[in-house]
Amino acid sequence: MTMRLSRKHLTLIVLAALVALAPAFFPSNFYYRIGSLIFVNGLAVTGLVVLIGFAGQISLGHAGFAGIGAYACALAPGYLGLHPGLAMLGGAGLSGVVAWLIGRPILRLKGYYLAVATLGFGILVSMVLANEAGITGGPDGREVAELGLRSALAAIGIGLNNAQFWYAATGLSMLAGAWVALNLHDSPSGRALRALHDSEVAARTVGVDVARLKLQAFVISAVYASLSGSLLALMNRFITPDVAGFLHSVEQVTMTVFGGVGSVPGAILGAAVLTLLPQALTVLQQYENLILGLIMMLVMIFMRDGLLPSLMRRLKGRE
Amino acid sequence: MTLLSVEGVGIDFGGLRAVNDVGFSVSPGEIVSIIGPNGAGKTTLFNMISGVYRPQRGRIALDGTDVTGMAPNRLAERGLSRTFQNLQIFQRMSVLENVMTGCHLRERGPVLGDLLSLPSSRRRSAATSARANALLERVGLARAAEREASSLSYGALKRLEIARALALEPRILLLDEPAAGCNAVETEEIDHLIAEVAKSGVAILLVEHDMKMVMRISGHIVVLDRGEKIAEGAPATVSRNPKVIEAYLGTQAAEAGDAVG
Ligand SMILES: Nc1ncnc2c1ncn2[C@@H]1O[C@H](COP(=O)(O)OP(=O)(O)O)[C@@H](O)[C@H]1O
Ligand SMILES: [Mg+2]
Image 1 (cartoon, protein in one colour):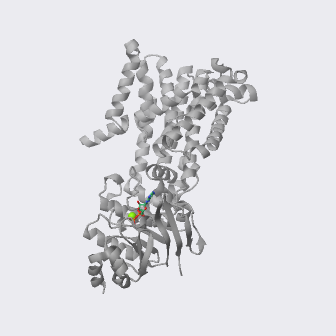
Image 2 (spheres, each protein chain N blue to C red):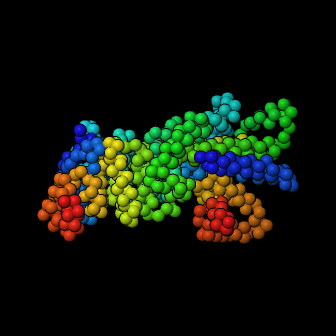
Image 3 (cartoon, rainbow over the protein chains, first blue to last red):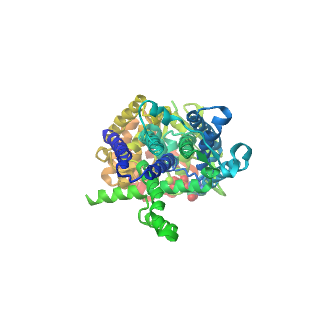
């Protein structure tokens, strides 16, 4: 027990240290922006670790929940007069309710049937966002209100520029998300989720209510996706329906699997690498996507469990 | 004092009558064995009793309540636990976590508490961990507690499944070939463990090919052949039944019968 606890704490300490110390090496404000994007993605992939890595259920439509979270922040302040921060929480609640409603029928499906059904949900959300132009602004997107927290912080003497503020806000959100997911991993619910991933029939016979637990994992991961979408909208002060699009869903599943689908720090590493790589590879100009694709294929061929778990195994093997 | 009663159950797969019109009963503390050649329908019968398959015919009652077709997790809540012939281990979890999951019904709680690692959730996990460690001690796997389950030998995995099934604190335990693939020493350990569990009042339903073990520990034997019950009774009676000898036991029975008689 103490061993597991310390592993969780070690992971959190390393993540927190990386978030806190990285700015010391930033040559310009632009890097705060890249860091924030990594953290927003890191939050989303942590939710996918709960769904795919723990519970073993695929979703190719989670960007749909990011869309709900993003547009909650874009629309609720104007239409309902909600503070953007409350809109973010409201969006998360709405995503949870939607996930609960669609999860009940959808999660009876397995494997690629589930993949296609979730895909359909994501497409549905992005279609609604693009077509209901009167409300959402349509494919051209719309502006998002200022969160206002930065000026509040400045008033109490914490002066951050915009890029720094969002670096801190998204970094702390990602760390909180990691803490929650790691808590879940070693809890009774987390064990039951991982158990039904390995053997549904055995999980059932020890009393696990499989349908209920899958649904809980689905709702939890939807809330993660929604919060990440909200943060993206508030940070960019602008949002388009692409946030809910198929490509965004696939990108996040790719990050999760690339980094290590069963591992919270692994998936976050995947988010970091796949957010940074395209930036770094721009020097290769037209070969950028070619090299990116090649790297991804090679990692999956030679590091089947994902980047971090495979690296850890190799390190252990050498000892 | 019947705990489990099975009456005329049957199921077909396509045209195959996998199990047909089988009935028997098990009382607390009793060890009842189901024997029969491969393909006789023993595992299918277990799957129906544990709710994995819904019987197409007949009735199953647990403690007087009709539980026919009830979901496995509901049956677990009523104290029915089982192991699997072809192992259903939680591969990517540690040995200890496998057994802890067997305590699920006792340790589960509000998911919000688990997400926030509230003290109540941590207390439940700690209590489960202690119980699971004690069970691992009992099946001789205490030293492997932190290992990944998939790294264990076949015999060890068989014992791990028994520990996980016991973690449920069942009133009735279904064991599907618990000693298959185990060496003589391991088999004897499992044999003792089963007898001990039965002595504590748990009803046991056993499928096992090791006839010596079956004859030694069973109070009652049910013989299946091609899905039908062809005989039942005390070990000594069953092993002398000509139909049984013809269908299944052959020379093995004569030996075992001698050993018993
Ligand atoms: N899910 C299934 N689908 C189709 N046939 C099955 C299924 N399960 C078992 N059977 C068939 O039912 C018969 C009984 O199998 P089983 O119960 O596994 O026998 P035993 O455990 O006694 O060796 C066999 O002919 C087997 O092939
Ligand atoms: Mg069998």
